[in-house]
Structures are given as C-alpha cells and as structure tokens.
Figure 1 (tube, rainbow, N blue to C red):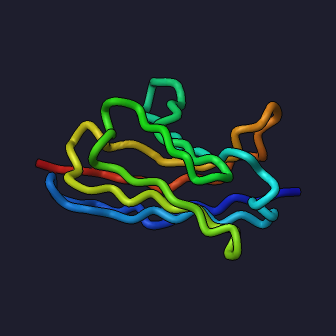
Figure 2: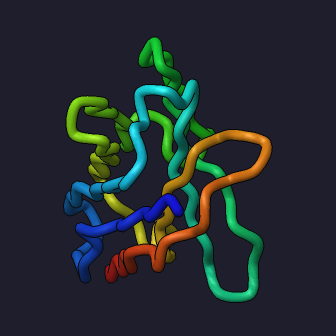
Length: 115
C-alpha cells in the first residue's frame, strides 16, 4: 500500500517562507500528475497546486505567484515552496497523486501563519 508522508509545516510569521515535502513509498515517476491540497477545519480539502510529469504546473489564484510546486522523481518526493505566507494560508497540507483513485491520504503537515 502506498504511503505518503508530508513534512515541513511549522508556525511562521506572515511574510515568511516554508518548504513542504511529500515523500511517497511509490514510484511517482509513473504518475502523470501530483498535487498539493490544503484543508481548513470545517471546510473541504482543496487542491491548490499540481505538477505533471512534464513539470507543467497549475496553481489556484490564491497562491499563484507565492507558491512553487516541484517534484524529484528520483527521490519519489514532491515539494511546495511557500513564500510571502499569509494568515489565510493556515491549514493542514496534504499531497496525493491526481488519479481516479487517490492513494491513501497521509497525516498532512500543519502550517500556521500568524500576523
């Protein structure tokens, strides 16, 4: 069974930066697209960034220009560089493959941004 482990979350002041990592026990090179999601308590999980096997990327407007998604297939790892963080970025962040039946969700990593 595939395991996803997210890490890198922290408590950070607004304007700061964090780099999240997503380590997969599966070979992510076979997956066309991977994505980062975030979930705020009481709200549904939201896809905020995706990256294809050709490294084409897509972002939701709220993070565009501030977040950068990347993947290292050799390490089975995906990253999310988050700059100029805002309090509204506070959430639990998850990663997954963008396939018809997503892999089991990891525990996520908490990002808390204070002003």
